[in-house]
Structure formats: structure tokens, C-alpha cells
Amino acid sequence: MHLPRRTLLAASLFTALAATVPAQAADANTVTVMVGGINKIIYLPAKLTEVLGYFKDEGLVVDLQSQPAGVDAENQLIAGAVQGVVGFYDHTIDLQSKGKEIQAIAVLCKVPGEAQMVSTKAAPTFKSMADAKGKTLGVTGLGSSTDFLTRYLAESKGVPSKDYSLLPVGAGNTFIAAIKQDRIEGGMTTEPTIAQLLKTGDAQVMVDLRTEEGTRAALGGLYPAASLYVQNSWAAEHKDLAAKMARAFAKTMQYISTHSAEDIAEKMPKDYYGNDKALYVSALKASLPMFTSDGRMPAGGPETVLKVLAATKPAIKGKNIDLSKTYTNAFLAAK
Image (cartoon, rainbow, N blue to C red):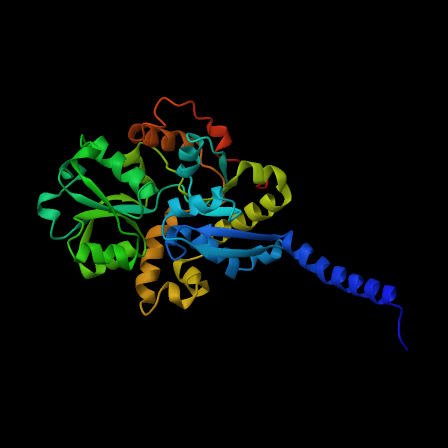
């Protein structure tokens, strides 16, 4: 039996529409998040949220992508290529000074979780940031948070930026190679790179920003760092999605605060720690105090970050920055 052409067309159209409905429904809960170096322990909550199933529990499909430096991740966000970034909160302030409104909707770290390292070879004549004159210092990328913090640490010891050089060397193996090859005398990096350098003896910790005590001593207060941030306009238009994302990360922060480094390491993919799981656990133990327990912005944190940025960035100094637009706890459960 031959069906009329109109009937066949209608059937084909119905089939096509039926096929697209589930895809559209799925797309409505699909979010792409760029992470400023997914293997860094400061950004561990991103992958941990995925492996614990908390994104799935919220009905989300989250595509985690990685960029070695936070500044590259923020560019992807501004371009609209991704909906969220797991990177440093300080970018929200920096971008507001450039007319872009970005806000952290979940704060993962209350301190930077980084350390200013000095190569063992340079250590005899490079004892503090007051000795930075004439040195070449490594950062993940120019315009990155490691850049902001390095400049502040040097400036606070009376060494202006014109007196030293910053070299973008990334993190992990590329940072370690720069130290070993004497391309840099020191630099700002994170775990597990710090633990690897300490184990081999190639570098030492000069300024420790992995703890509250060290951060307060160096920066004058808590410095909220690793965060999930999005464009303010996107959050306003996708309140349900933003709330689901914030809740998923908050659950992870609660998990981290109630589990050991060993428990957490067991959840992570093997390529995060390679053939030295003990080193990874050691690095994770040193890092656990930096995480928030609930994803909320710590009191006084934004003011410390603004102070640090204003001291080193002419574009921010004297600008009227509205901190209330750089973060929100509104998508998290009320205390």
C-alpha cells in the first residue's frame, strides 16, 4: 500500500521533531565549564564533583574542559564559548574594571593554595621577595592570578615590577622544567607541583599561601581564590542552572571537609597522581585547609583581593569597583 505523499511528509516531520525533543531537553541542562588547569589540586573540586555524581544528582550534564592558565579560561567565558569557569575569584574584579560583569557563584578556596617558590640554586642570594630585583620569576600566564600575586608580594617588599621579569611557564612539568633549566630563579605555583619540587630538592618554599596563617601574613587577610564563576547576565537568565551548579559544588566542599586526603585521592582518576600516589596524598593533605566547607564567600575576602589588585594594577587603582557584583551566595542554601 502506498501512502499519500502528504502523509509521508507529515510522518517524517513528526519523527524529526520527536528526535529533537530529548536533545533539546538534555541541552537545557548541559553546561560547559573551563578549568584553569584541571589537574591542579586548587581546582580538584571540579573533577571530584563529577566523579561523586553530584552534577548528575542535580540533573546536569557538565562538560569539563581544561586550560593551563586561568586568564585563558576567562577569555573563553567572555567569548561565550563556555558557560562557567573554575578559576580564581580575582578575575571577577579585574574584568569589572574592563567593563565585564562576572560573578563567583561558589567559592572553593579561601586562600590561594599557591606558594612562591625559589630554586635551590638561587636560594643563597634570593631569601625573600625583597631580593627579587634582577630575577626572572615564573607565572602560569601573564594576566593570571599568579601574575597578580607575584607582583603584590614584590611590591610589598619595595621591589617595583620594572626591576624583575615575569615569564609565563604554565604549571606542572613545564614549571618544573623552567626551574631545572635555570630559566627562572623562582615562581608562583600550586600543588602537586610544589610537592614534586620539594621532593626532588630543586626548589624551596619562600612564601606559603596554602594556609590561612601564611596568607594573612603575606596579604593581610583571607584571599578567596578558586571559584566557579559565570557571567552575571547568564546567571540572571539561567537561575535554575546556576543554582544546580552552585549546589553541586557546595556538596563537594562538604565532602572534602569531612573526608581524609586518602579518601579523596581514591576518588580521583589515576592520571591525576600517576605513579606516585603517596606524593599526591601528601600534597592533598597540605592543601585541605585551603578549601571552604560550604562554597560560600568568606567574610572580608573580596576586600583583601581588591586591595591586592589595586596595589599592582593601574586599571583598578582608583576605580569604583562594586564588589557586590563580583560574587553571590544567593544560589547556595541559606545558613
